[in-house]
Image (cartoon, rainbow, N blue to C red; front, side, top):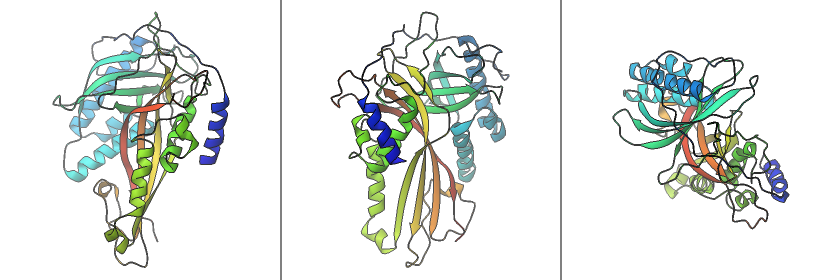
Amino acid sequence: MNKAVASTLVAVLTLTGAAGCSGKPHRTVHTTPVAAESSPPPEAVNPETAAKAFHSFVNNDDVARASGDERLALWWTSEGQSQLTAAAFRRAVAAGDPVPRYRYDSPVFYVPHLLVNGPQWFVVSARRTTADGKDPHTVFMGFLASKSVKRWRLSLAAVLDDKQKPPKIAVGADGYAKALPTFDSHLLIPPRLVPSIQATLAEEGPQNVAAHVMDTGKYTTGYYTTDQKAMKKSKKEKKIGLRSSALYAATSFPIFPLATEDGGGMVLYALSRDTVISKSKKKPGQVPVPDDVAPFLTSKLVRNEIDVNQTMQYVAVVPAKPKKDDGSVKAEIIGADGGTVKATVPNK
C-alpha cells in the first residue's frame, strides 16, 4: 500500500497549477427541532431538508442515549459512526455508567449542489457539549442518504482541535456550498488520497515522501513516534516478552470534500487502526489487557495475543496546489474523533 501511495504522491507533486474558489460567508439555518424521522426529498438535498434531518438526528440520538436504546441510536448512524456509537454503548454497559449524551448548538449547514440520482450528503458544523453544557468543542458532521437507504444518517463526526479555527467553507449567494470531486487535481492532495497519505506518515514517519505534502504532527508522525516507542518497550516489558505493532489503512467509508474560500478544500474522512498486542511464547503468562480494550473482549481467556481494531475520523484542510512547489504548502489535520470498536483473542 505504501509504495503505491508514494508513487501516486510523486505523480501528484509533479502536476502544476492552482485552483481558486470564491464564495460568501456561510449562513446558519434556524429551524425548530422535529422529533420524527426526516426522509430525503425526491429532489436533491437543500438547506431546509438538511436542517430538518440534522434536528431529527439530534433529538432521536439524545432519546436513544438517555434511554439506553442502542438499536434506536444505530438507526440514525452509518459507516464509522455506527461502529463508534455501538462502542460507546458497550463501554457504558461495561462500566455501569450512562451512555454519554450531547447538546448541539449554533449549527451551520454546508449543503452542496448534487445530482438528484446520486448519493445525497451535507456537512454540519456545530458547537457540541456534554448534556450538562460542559466540554464545548466544534464538531464537523457528515450526513448521508444513499440510494439503498432512503433516510438521513450520521456517517462521520470529527471534533476540531482546541485553538483551531474552523476553515471558511466557500458558500455561494444561493446558500449552497461547493462540493469537490474526490479526484480533484487542483488541490495539493486529491481528497480521495488524503486518508492514504496520512496512513503512510503514521506508519513510516517523517522520512516518507508524504511529508512533503502533509504536515507532521500528532495525527501523522505523532502516531509513528508513539508506535515506535511501544515496539521498543521498557526493560520491564522486554523481560516479559511484550510487544505491539500497528497498521493504518484508508477505509471504504464515504468522504466529504468541500471547497474553502482560499481555493483549497476541507475533507472529512475515516481511517482504521489495527493493533496487535502480543507476548513471546517463550515467556509464560498472559497479555495484560489495556483498560480501553477490556469492554470489547468476549473471551475471558486471554493468552498471548490481543487484536484491537479502532476507527478514527478526521477533518483536514488541503491547500490549492501552488504554482511553484517549495515544500512549504502542506495539508493539515485539524480535528479528530474515534477509538476502539472491536477486540478479539485469536484461537491459537
